[in-house]
Length: 146
View (cartoon, rainbow, N blue to C red):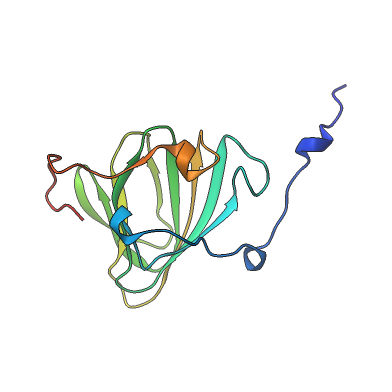
């Protein structure tokens, strides 16, 4: 029988106890977003998984970006908006579940008149730095760069 690893015991928190992330910069695509890292290398000691919560007020957006070292999932819990990928834009609403393999462009904009609540995660990375966050370059071709 395997004995539990006390150093890696289960982790539990509440959304109310997790502070909003500070220092997310508009020039890196974080436009009016409220981001919380619920589970990551700092909270819970996870080196291979990050789980987050994001609130996007009307008009807020996360510009198109990619992760070289992490797959991403996204669950739209409430509200509506648009998903932006390297294939263009698609409407999105509460109940949608989106998977973006590493290296693919993706983003989200709140096009509605109420807040959008997203629960998301990265597989393969316990932090933003480990996920390999990047923005499109000036020569990348899209219908719309945002």
